[in-house]
Image 1 (cartoon, helix red, strand yellow):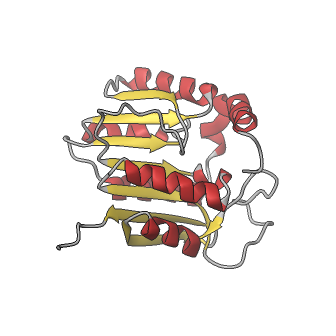
Image 2: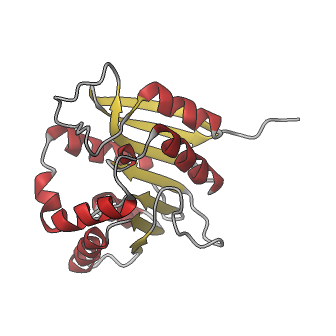
Length: 208
């Protein structure tokens, strides 16, 4: 991680009120749509949205899910998410502090689906691997990751990659980390050469 958690939290809190308006690129909107599409919760599913930000994914999934839990390190972003939920009358969401390697989920809460969009790229490769292992330990049926990731050679001049704050991984590294954590990669969507969506399902038990 190129900045501390506190630095990232402060940075996003500072821009929280304008964040939604700033995310107007075609690739970002496409990524949001794909994450929502592949998450596909039923009314029996609890969804955990890590790096929920202002709640775009969480609020889109809430009408179809039993419950959505949004976690972020920025209180400013969480305040925006809570305000948006209240404005549209969505009550089956809960927003609170949490992070990839410590999602702050109750031990007795069954998590069926985990999603994350445009957040994990702030972690280093090793931190991403640790985060994916924590997610796997929650035993979700599905993990949908939309993020900045490299399908080819990294190009720091592209709009989705800011070397001073971002630390994206290659698609291959993320695929290996997911597989090593016990997931099976079921879909790879390239939105842009530096933006994609990975869909991982929990591997079925091996018959002995």
